[in-house]
Image 1 (spheres, rainbow, N blue to C red):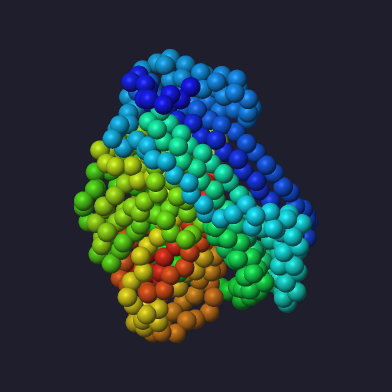
Image 2 (cartoon, one colour):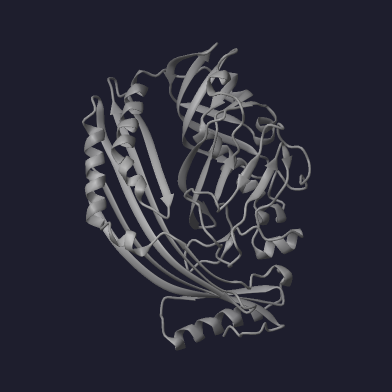
Length: 445
């Protein structure tokens, strides 16, 4: 159904995706490992401004033709306003390797379960630790994308991710948790860090047993790289996604080229970074590229797919991603980072009094207003270079534009986190990160 020459009536593309995955989990209540394989194809057409999409996990020639015909008929059933720019439709021939199948096969699900069990026992042997929860995941994905404009590209990606959670229990019902994660693309070498990360999670959970409730009010705050990455991803990245901008649902609408943050702030999104959201091409076949969302305080770029690049009059950024072969590509982030500054970490604490907040427990952002609520995993008071006793239940509230404008210092260190980002019912692997950031006038409580 995908002709070698473009049909003037329609644009069409097809994705073929094969994935293998192994995962293991170990805790007091459960211990298991699983392996899965899946294969499927999806077809998508744009006819008279209307999209049609269909997918199948049947692999015969007849099933593919039937699926393509269904997608085309859905697109042709009504007229719409969607569009793409013919000049920006990918038409390259490419093959990209981000990891090998042999490395995936060299680590069985049983091997991952042993790693999870060993890490869990390492956490639980620490004094005052009540329980542990460890998960290890390994995914190898093969993807081909073709379209009516001559694109024929193939990508292989190996992803590895681990999660370590420690639960500490003290007196009077005092329960504290801490977690560590790691993830990588193209290799599984990070598995060797499992015991180190286990001990770190246990130590932080145990230390939080002596924590106090934080003061309430407006403070100078230093956030670590994990919270800085969360700010970049949740409060800035989602607001810069082209579909959100186009629908009028973003606080950044109409702000392109305007100063929206301290000139110290530069935020990028890039699948080219060696982090968990890495890929060589998106699910529309557009080659990966780096997008500078904020450049020295100025809002400088959107994240886009083919459709929303055309709608906004820009080139596609390569952020058209789908969670599975059965899902249509939508605008998604990859690796969203705040660029480090030039200050030494110690200098962020040298003057004044404030709060030092680390780790991410959860939160939410309203992309329309930019208002956010973030819960830090742990906190500390600081005063003139001295870090004080730990604090728990530290919740930051504010507005992203005000917070970005109040950035005072950025450290020259850098830390990344891994995760799965959910949007419109789809989950895709992402990375985020940044340096330590000192911000004035952040409200707690």
